[in-house]
Length: 303
Length: 49
Image 1: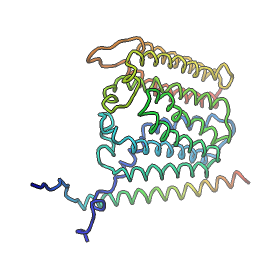
Image 2 (image 1 turned 180 degrees about the horizontal axis):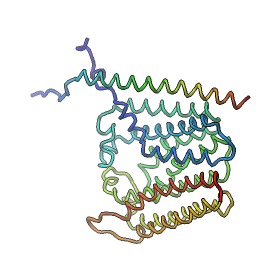
Image 3 (image 1 turned 45 degrees about the vertical axis):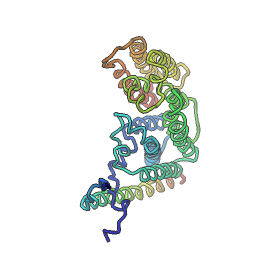
Image 4 (image 1 turned 135 degrees about the vertical axis):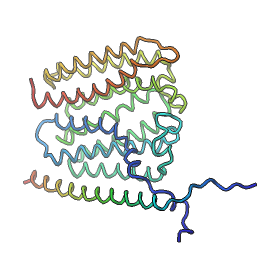
């Protein structure tokens, strides 16, 4: 009965690769790594299957957040070069499928966390998904240039959830790791926003360089980098980590601040290639990976 | 003057290929989840013993 098929029935079903792309896999890799580090740095022993399942639940929760973010921002993504080829703005996926996929994945991730670890971790995971979707994506991002500052909390949850999944409780070290990612987010995102400023302006997103200008953004990158460096080092003198983490944090944070000084003190003209900003953005990702790796290394092989 | 809407021709081969690809992916994922849930249950039984 091909002649009675409606448009919806004859529309191509979504390719699984597009559904996978909806989960922002590159962002997910950092989420998985920091969650795993939070879990591995926690005291006591976690069964490997339960540890794997908890990290999988966090990864699925992050994927669900990414999918719901892309569902809500499809119209904005279509206006930006960087995101125009995503499955929704490119028309390879229909919004209803994306919404169902995101909500289903979110519910499943919380259920998996509840089944594999404990209700505290499941509650935190649910809170982080809701915070990312409702507080960051729907409320803050289109309204204020402080979107990244407050919204950074959503990305800071994974090590805390990993720790709670392993222990069932919260301790000072995972809270400090939460604070570290929270303070790392503004310089990381504003470095990116400086070299894709025109994209954000075209989409009407009030990112800091668009609203407050480049000079103010550069000053704030430097300010946050200094505060972040202090937050990165402070677990060492407080006795929550050892010298291995401490020296790693000192050296890496010093380089972070140096790169931020380059970005924070310069002015650019027409046609600038924005090399220091791109360098800071790339380094900030490596910084977080190495620092969280050092937290685990310090816990397992203290100096 | 009315204009026909610009509709892409319906490609049944591509439709079936995507259906098959998604069905295969779903089958693998459900199988993996069944194994994972079994292993979680076994792990929890070991912990509570």
